[in-house]
Image (cartoon, rainbow, N blue to C red):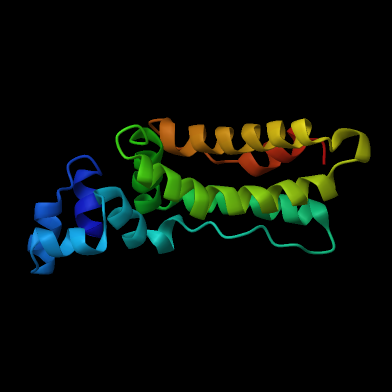
Length: 166
């Protein structure tokens, strides 16, 4: 199924094809996974798992690690297909979107929030500032890797660090 996802994309992947490749019935697939999205998220877990931001004695190093995690994860070929699918098909597959947010997005975001709060001066670490900075970081990495025709990550981490004044 991973090869099918990379070759054909999420929208063209069918449960019939997955079942045929696995040598099982379509009913067997649906017995274990309610939706195609759930199946794909589980199959791509190693690729889309971003983890938590490490916590060291140096908050700047931790913020750099958080940005590295985003760049590395979004740059994985299968992750880019699945992450884009989880975001764009949310209206048609709310279960996939919810699992993606709860299992992969929010845990990282909570740890990244903590990291930014530790890294920023007290007068800049208000919740709205931190959440906005996370939006800028994630949105920029997303745009540069998943949206642009030619991914562009050269100097991206350094520019983001400079933008948030660390």
